[in-house]
Amino acid sequence: MLRVRGRVLAGPDDVRDGLWAVDGRVTYERPAGVRDAQVVEGWALPGLVDAHCHVGLDRHGPVDEATSEKQAITDRDAGTLLIRDAGSPSDTRWIDDRADLPKIIRAGRHIARTRRYIRNFAHEIEPGDLVAYVAGEARRSDGWVKLVGDWIDRETGDLGACWPRGEVGAAIAEAHRLGARVTAHCFAEDSLRDLVEAGIDCIEHATGLTEDTIPLFAERGVAIVPTLVNIATFPILAYGGEAKFPRWSAHMRQLYERRYDTVRAAYDAGVPVFVGTDAGGSLAHGLVADEVAELMKAGIPALDALSATTWRAREWLGRPLLEEGAPADLVVYDEDPRADVRVLAAPRRIVLNGRIVG
View 1 (tube, rainbow, N blue to C red):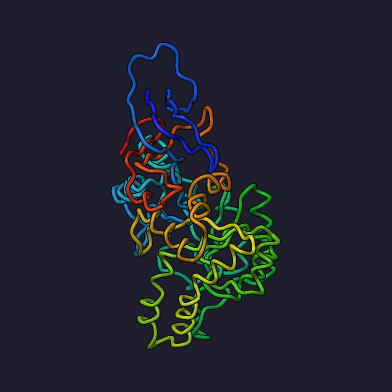
View 2 (cartoon, rainbow, N blue to C red; view 1 turned 180 degrees about the vertical axis):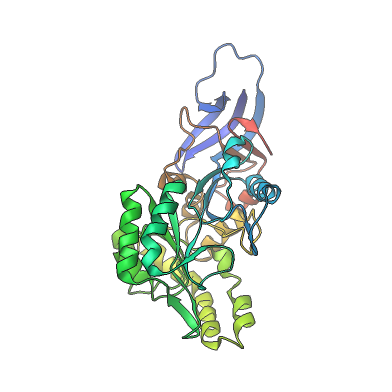
């Protein structure tokens, strides 16, 4: 049994005086006959959400279970207790049996065009097979499917859309029929309108948003996960590819330079924005506080940036907050994170399933 003695931020304006965790579940009523319980003091938030993370993956492809465990623990110790795994070639279902590791919502393995993504990451297929592969990943996933919407096209030397409109529309419709939502990796501008009009639910990175496509996203309620800590690597990538693909290199620099304006324009238009780090490919895990800080640099107000990794993010993913009977997954801080989101980088205690794990 655990007692949180302090302030519990059950919602941005729903502040409660402490809670109890009994058999791993939240209750706001003092249990009868309590004589001994662990006590944690401070400001409690629902476990943070990283809505774009890759457990079981590094820059070379799938990793072993020991490495996957280290990745999950690093995220957990940063306060991330709910992960939307946006594509992994590894089977990480064993994590579900570990009460001390974050809960994962899997999008299956990436689905990419042949030779149009990072080697060893994705199923690499041609458009005629897209519907079948999307159906397969929808059945294997936890309600999400991940497409690679654009990548460098060697014929043009620049970013280009990967899928014809007809095939991607049929694939998204099939995923929806099977009860799954669809998201797509997109850096550039070209693929966005087709994907949104085909019914996609989310776009990762979304650096190619423009004044022409932002209203369409807002109208359709299509979310974005900007992964700004990853977009910060664009200048390095551009430098590395400049000799072989100068058009691509210049394009990547342009997308980087306008990244904050792009995110702020989407937010101002009412596009849902969520926190994701893109950890697990080339980026380290445990960067959720850094991504919140990046959203604020883009001009998103502190409370909304905080909500993008807590209350609103959990609602979007269909997972509970700190409500009566919910799993006691929470992070405790020394100060009110609404007043200063920088405290997210220094959690005092991590509680998963009612147990202190960090």
